[in-house]
Image (cartoon, rainbow, N blue to C red):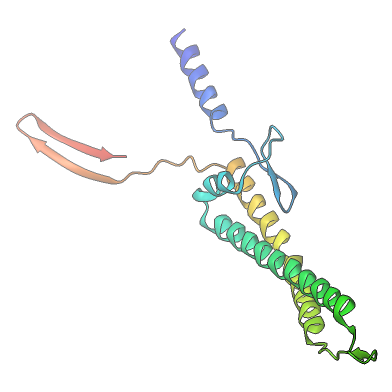
Length: 167
């Protein structure tokens, strides 16, 4: 009966190491096994055990933020420049003559350049986040269950000799 209980406890220890895997749904959605969306803070807490996955995730999120800033900034620049040109380009002077103001095209080029750079930046960020999630899933499926011995020492006293092992 004792051997049956010992066998049962050995088998249950293998099941206790099973962890939930993460699912990469989209660049801004990382789901747990219950299909619940995790916040970036929760994801970073899970990735704290693997520095490479955390570095990839942080790099991907930084690229996403920078890409969003450039994309929306470029769109706002182009739209604002166009609205200013449409509404303020024609005026009539005191003599009834139509005066057309000449404006520079530089804001258009700056806005379009920002949009193109943003597209180039945003292409790579989802790959980094996906790679980070796959690294963590690999760690969760293959846990490190090895025994770590910190120190060993030989102890002697009046009762005899012994070995001290610190885990």
